[in-house]
Amino acid sequence: MSRLESMRRRLTAQIDGINWAAETIAPLPGDVLEMGLGNGRTYDHLRQQLPDRRIWVIDRVLQPHPSCIPPADCFLEGEADAMLIRLAETGARIVLAHYDFGFGIKEKDVAEGARLSPLIAPLMVPGGLIVSQQPLTGFEQLCGPDSIAPDRYLFYRAG
Image 1 (cartoon, rainbow, N blue to C red):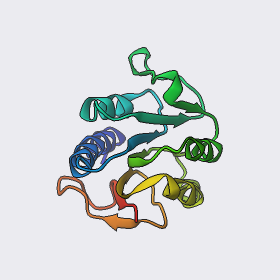
Image 2 (spheres, rainbow, N blue to C red):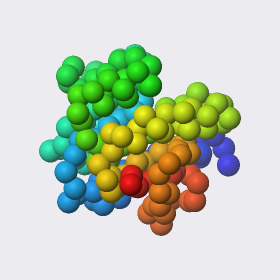
Image 3 (cartoon, one colour):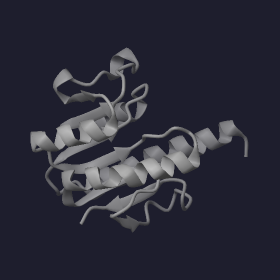
């Protein structure tokens, strides 16, 4: 599979996974968390799918497409661990989180997901979902939509 085909597969998995998760959490109260804004494509999709939910965003720097800049009071700029702690201090309760942090080095990405998982867990509403491109720990792993190949995207439920 070419890198271009792999990218298409990843984007399709993100769209299908977020749509599935948004539908699944519909009856639950809570905010949404985008971990890793990048250029804002996923954030934009979350806004479209969940227009009535507050969407918190964490990233090291704010450099998305101009149409995808989150409101200043919902953007936490800095290192993930410090920003997750800061978000917890606001009292935010997250019903859907999208984990999109990564260095592009599998071993480093897996270690980072394991390190940050205990900081994500206290933010989550019981029964809330996490859609992730990286493995996380301490959550119940779920099967996502049938349209997504196993291990292409990961889905977790908070306890």
